[in-house]
Length: 65
Image 1 (cartoon, rainbow, N blue to C red):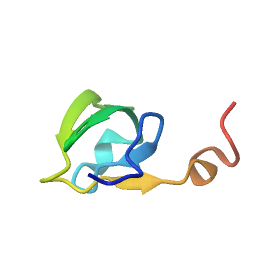
Image 2: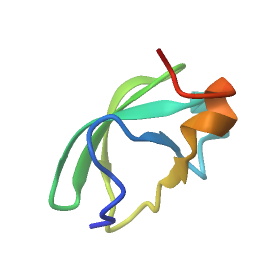
Image 3: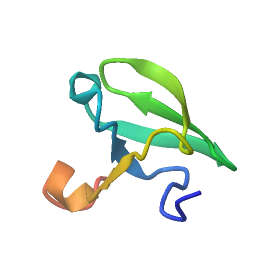
Image 4: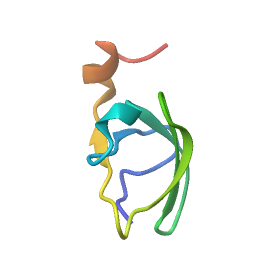
């Protein structure tokens, strides 16, 4: 498992850009639940899909409040 995939992390699914930005809700082993802007809550197997961790400064132009 990628150590950066922790609850609260912002990610994108490289094969599903239309899902938009997602926030990790939980991560247990290779199973990561992400709440995406346009797809809702999705369970991702990170042994199959490498999520792209996104810097919140790039997303929000600074730390989210």
